[in-house]
Length: 124
Length: 131
Image (tube, rainbow over all chains, first blue to last red; front, side, top):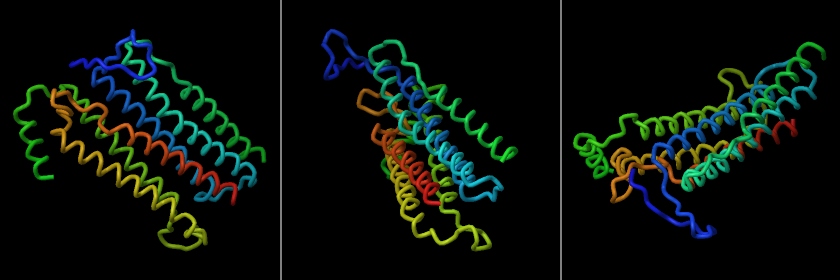
């Protein structure tokens, strides 16, 4: 692919940044969009738990589940573009790709929500 | 628009450097999926009942402004993607050197999308606290 050398402000000048292969850029963009869809799905779940479905849980449990889902969604929606920019910069410098904390955050959050739902459904 | 369409058709028929993995097309489809999900979640947040009036309640006026903002954001992104897709010959050449478009949307569109998603999350969280 046509590599276009460009320098970024803030670099020391000895590293030449190159525009990465467009397929990598597009893959990065699709990953970002998948995370945004994940966040939107979590928001949909929060709306369902909070307002749409009639539940026999205690109000506190319902609020906790809804708030956790939206908090998780906001974290994902805020972090997704940050990670997108980081990956893009790393690919320009042809350096190692940064790891994302989003999978772990999502896993912990979903496990927490599942536990709260179990407690709210069976023990309260 | 017409000019862009003709250029796109020309590019489709003549250009032999089309990505065999259809990467720009897949990315455009990912954008369309995302916009559809935005509209669906916004309607869910509005929760206008099909038959009864018990679910909608009295807070519809409070839910309408964020929903309108979300729909406007989706519209802006749709127009931006459409113009860019047509203007680049269906994603074939973004600049005079003939490189394909990457990313499909400009970076501001990605930031706008994530800001809108985060904003909707905050609104739903506030509705949980407010009851």
